[in-house]
Image (cartoon, rainbow, N blue to C red; front, side, top):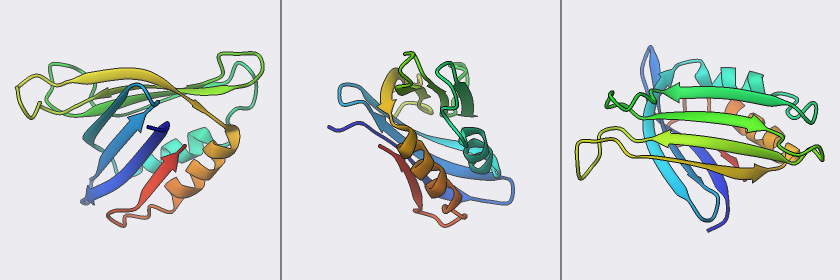
Amino acid sequence: MAPIFEITLIGYDIDVIELLIVASNGYFSGKTELCAGRNDLQKLSDQLKGFPSAPEDCRNFEFGDLDPKNRQGGIRMSFFCPHPTGQAVLNLKLKSAEGEYHKDPESSEFCIPIEAAGVDNFINQLNRINFIIGNKAKLI
């Protein structure tokens, strides 16, 4: 499996959006469904503009709820450059909502190598989701 990070709009109402997030680095993978603020995709897009701007650039963002005591899905995204060469990485922590086969949420944490041009394309895709169910943004 090739590395991928994908956000799909699966629903919305007046206050929140529902997202399906699927990610894999080729060895590890995970997915979660979660609720986020109605403007959170725009906030993510705005925060990622210009990434990476320097070798030590690091940008963090969260959607949903990562507290294992809560039964909601969540994700933490850390975009950073671990090497002075500027090679960028996306570190992810995903947590499912209540498990399908048991009551406890499941989680995974892993990194995906990313390219600056891929981030720019991802930003453009985030801006085109426009509350159309099924629209997605992919970072590959």
